[in-house]
Image (cartoon, rainbow, N blue to C red):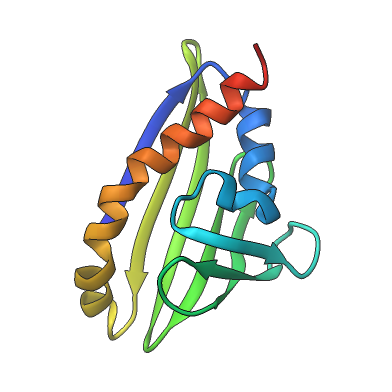
Length: 139
């Protein structure tokens, strides 16, 4: 199961990128997080921790990175990885940003069933929070 949501904004791609890569402030827009941080600058293979509102602290690493365009981070779960991908696309009519979530591994089906519906429910609101923050700071 791959969960994906795309939003159009009048904010610049650079502004969305700044918000996405400001890990210590992810909880400002991600309603499911209490805290997050990186142990080093934002770069490929950087590692950090996420503290969700429900569940224990998770370690993550940036597994793919195209600067100012996209990145993916992975959280290890029992016998599976949670992948979160964020991608920017600039069109003539605005900036589009996409957030995808999926699970890979032996227990991916189980985690998709347990957490998938929650991601589907909260992702649109999380994306609208990013849009609101990005657009408010540039008016």
